[in-house]
Structure formats: structure tokens, C-alpha cells
Image 1 (spheres, rainbow, N blue to C red):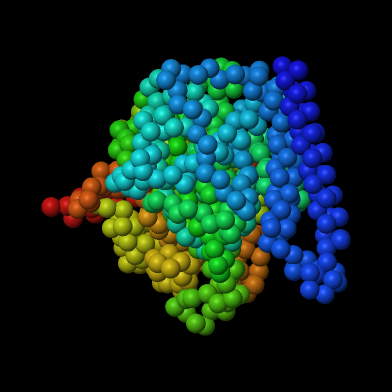
Image 2 (image 1 turned 135 degrees about the horizontal axis):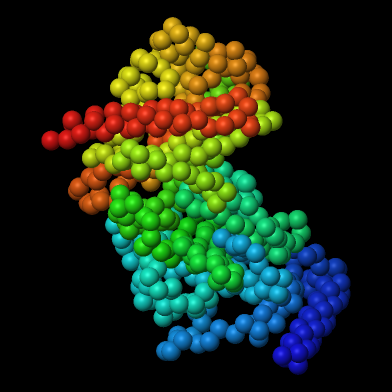
Length: 581
């Protein structure tokens, strides 16, 4: 093994020496070059095409040698120490299409616990292989990909024959889900890359899909102040044909791959094979994103029957869900930074609109943070007492200006209604229907004070509402309705009048305490061409039950929030049951 390593290093040094000699020869030729017409010195711009080509080729080869040298330092021993045994009838390793003048890097690995120092070279090797596989998956078409009900799906037989299986065979009992989607989004390609590589920005952008995320380690960093070649180790909790890339465009790749098989005594329920996206720069700050999502899941355990159709349909974990969420978030961020924001009240200043949008951004993030399950949370199922599955947990808030201080009780409940998601979303977002289901706040049809659009679809908007109930005259409610092809959300929170007036007058919205509640509306996975399916509605409430963070949870508090969340769910179910013929 050491002999082979020395031999490879010697070859790299010899290649570098040859390139330096070539480079020196070119420099001498350039200095002595003369014009064939006048005999004077030749400007660089007047050099022949062949000389230009040689110089460019020399620079490219030099960079390739530098990159190979860096990779060799990390991968040589890993390949020897962790050989992958060939499987019977295994096809040769696929050579992915070459993307020239593009920048392919930014490798992130997900779902890790604790990786030993000795295993890190292998992790880097897996990441490099994952990027090659992602490029192939993003650029190849038939027969590797075929048309499915919800977009392009992977032909697993073709995949097994043509691409190296770096993670080994699929675990027994796991189900494969692999899809691809392409979209044009309004965000500069480097802004997307930075948001995908920053674990906090990434988990915020995909808050409706990612529970918790944190970076454990950075194995490699990019050179020259950019992210190219960066490899992160991170831990997460989860909740169309591509065009050939031109050699004149900038392309970035961001790939994720699970490395749970390196962790002893770990039995993962979900493995992510090379997944991620290629991001192509386009004019006017647009980007073309081709997303590949390839996961293997074990859903034989405690999965409620209500969710099985959704998971089996590919809509829950598929590439179309990631792309539609990315598109919607790019749209929201663009409007938040716009100089003019559309609304139905022209008297509201643009500064006030910006403040409201920032407040709503924090509200939505707080909603997903509050109701997302993580390994650190203990959720108690109340189904044994009521027959309906309501889960509750508690969180403490201390020295957080964005949340009221004390003990917070969170409750969540899921139910099915016989109506498509668009119908359910339109019903819930209509303030005239609020009296039929809102058990927390208004007690009547509210007065709409402000209505700001934050998307191309006018249903994507922010509203400021006031209750008709005189006993709640000192309270308002801020609400955001947001829809995308794969999911819709209605999130709202009560805000006292003095705090809201400060925000509208330019005050900092991050100091307004919020406890958001709301709904996530998903398809139930049964829709077919020409036939609408039903909806899975997930409702979550958050309540302050004690003003002291060290306070104790009482049976009365649990009973109250359980009754409220079930009352809201039953009212909504009753409405759509009555409408069903």
C-alpha cells in the first residue's frame, strides 16, 4: 500500500514538473513573439488560436493536477483500507459526463452521529463519488429515467447496471424512492449554493421538510475564498428532463449522502443515496435547478395508515417537493428585498410592509420549530384517553425576545378530509369562514386591516386581522397563507396592539413575542389523472401555560389544549363531510 502511494505521488510530481516546463516554454515564446508583418512585439490579443489554446490547456491541466493532488492525500489510503467488493455481474464504473468551465463541489453529508477520525478519508471518498453520481443522474435521460405520475422516476434496474453503488446493496425491507425535477427559480446561483451549504439557512429555507439540522465538522474547505470543494458533516432530522449544460455557463453541484453505515450500532430508518441539485446560472439573477432525490426508507414500523399513500406516491420525499419549496422560498425572499411590495392598502408604507414581512418570516420559522419532532423532544400521545391521536410536548422559553417567557405547551394532530388540498386551503384562508373553526382567538368574522402579497399567486399573502370581539380589542392577529404545488400552509399568531403599532412604525420585529399556530395541508397520495384525492391536514397549537420557565405542567392545561385542537379539527372535518355527496 505504501509503495503504491509513493508511486502515485511520484507520478504527480513528474506531471507537475512537465507542466512547469511547458509553462516556462510558453512564457519564453510569448516574450519573444514578433509580428510577421512589421517585426515588432506581438500583443496577447494578436496571438494565434493555437497558442491561445495551448495556454488555456496548460492552465486547465495545472488545475487538474492540483485538484488530484489534494484528493490523493485523502483518498489513497481510504480506497485500500476500505475496498468495495464487486458484486456478481457488476457493470463497469460509469464515467459521468464532463461539465467544463463549471464548478462542481460543495459536498454535504447528512444523518450522521459520530464519525471516527480514521473514517474521515472514506467519507471524503464517498462524497467525491456521490458528486460524480449526482452529475450523471442529473444529466442522463432514458432509459435511466422514465415518466411517472408526479414527474421523472428512476429505473432501478438501469441504475444498478450503470452506476456504482457506493453505499452497497439496499437494506432488506427498505423501499426505494428516486425522482428528478427541474425548475427555473428567481435567485442568483451563488446565493442558492450558500443557502444550501449553510445548515441554518438550509433548514430555514426547507423548514416545512427539515426538522433539526446542525453541522458537526468541515472535512474540506474550498479554495480562493469560495465553497468549491467544501465537504460538511451534518446531522438532520427529516420530516422533467434536464438540458445538456453548455460549456460557457457556470454550474454548481450540491450533493448529500447518508453515511449511517459507518456508525456502529445504528439502525437508520432512512438512507439518502447521492441526492442534491445542479444549479445553472441564467441571466437576470435566475437559476435553473435540477434536483435529484434518491432515498431508501423503512416504513414498516409505527407509520399511521393515513400517511402510507402519501409516502408511497413519492410526493412526501420526492424531488418535486424540494424544488417547489425552493421556488416558493426564493419568491418570498425576493419580495422581502423588493423596493415596492404589492398590497390592497396603498396607504401602508413600504417600510411597514417590510417590517410585517420580516415578522411573518420569523413567525413561520417559529411555527415549524415549535411543532417539529426531534430526538431531544419527548412527545406524549394522548390517544389512550380520547381515541384521537393528539401529541403534546413542552418547551421552556428564557431570555428569548421573540417568544413569551415561560413554559410553552405544544400540541399537534393530523386528520383526513375528503377534499383536495386546494379546496381545504382556500376554505381555511378565507376570513369569512374563520368563525366556523377558529377556537383560539377571534370568535367571529375578523376585520382585515392589511393585506400584502408575497408571491406570484395572490393566495400567497400576509394579512393583519382584528377581532370583532370587544373583549379582545387589544389583540390583533398576523397571518400568512402560503401555497406551492406540493404543500400549503396557514400560520397565524396573536399580537398585542402596542407591539404591532411599533412594527408598523419601523420598530424591530424580532422583539415581538410570538406563539404561532397553524395548519399544514398535504395531498393524501390517492390522486390520479382526472381524479382528485383527499387531504391530510396537520394542525398545531402553542400556548403559554406558565409565566415561569420552571413551572409545572398541569392536567388542566393538557386537557384544555387537547379539547381545543380536537374541536377545531372536528369543525373542519364536519364542513367537508357535509359537502361530500
